[in-house]
Structure formats: structure tokens, C-alpha cells
Amino acid sequence: MKKFRTLSAIAAAAMAVSMIPVSASAEDTTYHAYIGVQSASYSFRNAWYEPTYGQGVTGDDGMVYFDQITGWDGPTAVSKGGVFNDAEITGDGTYTVSVTDFDFGSDESLNLLFISTDIPLDSGVTISDVKVTLDGNTKYTFDEAYLSPDAKDYLEPMCINIWNDDLGKEDGLFGYTMPQDSIELTFTVSGLGAAADDTAAEEDAAAEDEAPAEDAAVEETEAAPAEETTTEETTAPKTGNTAAGALLAVMGVAAAAAVVSKRK
Image (cartoon, rainbow, N blue to C red; front, side, top):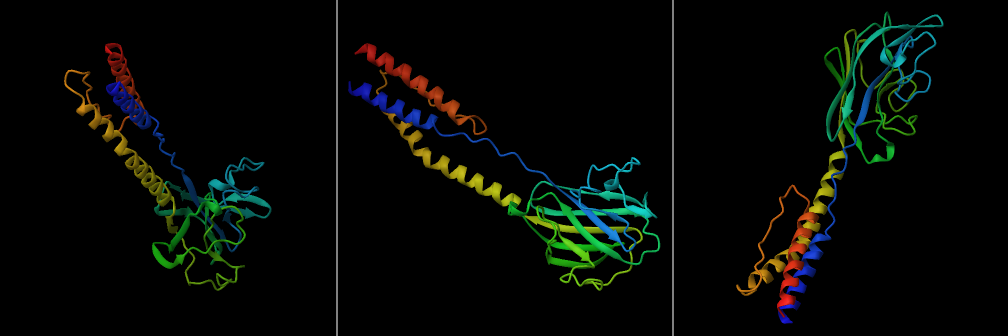
């Protein structure tokens, strides 16, 4: 009976190991960023979510406004060119959005220049080091992003807004010559990678807390007399399923317990 109780204890310990939850890796969230701009004559690319001219909106004339710089010939929308480099945001890091091959005509200034993202305001993500580069020349860097007060749902760093007091209105925060070739906005995203790292650390700590139970089971097995049932130690691969490995151990111990019980 003493040996049977020992094997029962081993089975209970192995069962405790098998009940350790195996968590799946969280799916990575991909966000997006787009350059937004408006010139003095209202040639523009609006925020991606804007209902009239935003992403995916096609005009009655078949024009897809978001895929170009849209200008005006009287009341008629016309293309002002524009080749865009948008960004996929997959984690903490530095990203750039830009536009080239545009034609702002005789305009000498911009009304708006901003980054339109689909990162929710309540996501815990921060944007910093927003650098404005016009025709290859860096004009200004915001250490902390100035977020548009008009964007109610998403992070939208503003660099130029001639109607905004904080950004200097018509005078702006920096001087520039109207760009002819390229407009780039570079920025740093923080807060996406940190959350994933914290989760991994918690999972590692939980696994370490359960480790003594597995060790105890091994020690009990090694202490059994040689003439009794011999149990081989099996270590599950680190990339495998911990619960499945522990379940096999339980099945082996249960079988051994049955053999000992019949001998008695």
C-alpha cells in the first residue's frame, strides 16, 4: 500500500503539470500611416478616414481621391499627381511616409501637413521625433508629436496647420520654400513592443513557478526500487506542447500504478 500511495502522489504531481495552461502567441497588430497634405490652392490628400475624399472613396467621375493629390479646375476635381510611400506599423520603431512626383502649380505654401494613422487614441501608443524633410532638407523636428485636436479617434500628428495657434498659424513653427520634388515625414512609434514583452515575461515566470512540481515527480521515480516498475524520464521539446507532454507522463504513471496494484 505504501508503494501504491507513492505512485498516486507521482500521478497527482504529473497531473498538476499537465494542467499548466499553454498560451498561444498573440497575433501581431499591424497599423498604417499615410501622409496628408493641403496646399494654398487646396490641392490635397485628406486623412484616410475622411468620408468624402478618404481611403477607398471614388468620385462620380471614377477618380479615387486618396490615391493622388487632388486639385481643382473650378468645381471639377483634377489630378495633381503624387506617388505615395505609406507605412505599415508592425511594432516599435521609426517609420517614414512621403509623397513625390506632385504638381502644386504656383502655390508657395502649405495649409496642412500631417500624418494620418489608424492607431486608436486609447491604444497606449506614443509618437515622437516627428521630422519634416522637404526636397531632402530637414526643416523641423517635433520631439513629441503634436496631435490634431480635431482627430477624435486616431493618432494624427500635425506639422503644419495655418488655422492652429499651437502650430503658429500662417507663420508656422519653421520656415521653408515650397517643395517641388519630395515631402517626407519621419516618426518614431513606442508602446507596441513593450506590451508584448511584458506578456512574455509573465508567461516565463508562471512556467518557472510550476517547475518544482515536475522535479519532485522525477525524484520520486528515481527513488523507486529497481525491481519495481521503471519509469523513463521524458523531456518535451521546448517548442512543443507542455500539456501534451505532461499528459503522456500521467498515462505512463497510471499504467505503472495499475501494475503495482495487481501485484499486491
